[in-house]
Image (cartoon, rainbow, N blue to C red):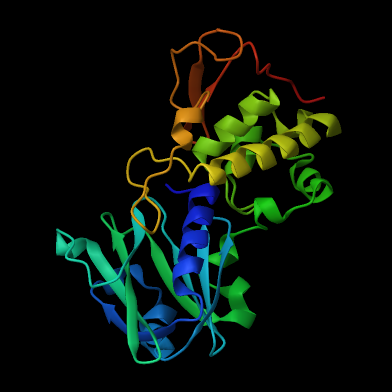
Length: 282
């Protein structure tokens, strides 16, 4: 599933393509991926101009001149691809929504939403009501929008393992399995440690690691493990910098201990047993 860095790379690329363009048409091929509001409102944004493209956690938000916003949550296998002409992607059934853009009377390009498994969702809502969206109402604040004090406050005292807390999108939005593993390794915190057992210094270290790892991943175009490519079809390269994610049985790059893994919150978590000591709640 694309996480915050991948979505941020898509946002930046999409911003460059769509800035100032007008939605000249919308083709809906698969309404299953649309919320009830989007089924009614997606064609109503035709002739509206793109003001900006934002992100909240793992969700893209396209703000339009008429006061509405289009929200796109790619989830596991969703893709947004930009092309100058309507793409001839095979199989065609994987293309679910196409937006056509123009500048004046001149055609500028097509944005295609693809999704093999159809887990993604598209919503349309007024910008003033964003938090009430079917997608965003389950999200806490974006992890990169938090100050260090806010970050620490949201984690302090949680009666759950820190890996599970980082994955909880209601606590903070944007982190998934890849970056939670990498951030915990970078900060030297074992994923099974209870959040309540972490002192302020450890939580501050976790905040610094989150900022560093996420920004490094954004600079490298995100991580392409299978499906992810950004809007121009280019894969990311940060997967080559992973130090623990999917490295079970390999030597730790820091101490050469063997990377181990286990299930936390239903997800496989990889860690170095030497560099990441498990702490017990006080």
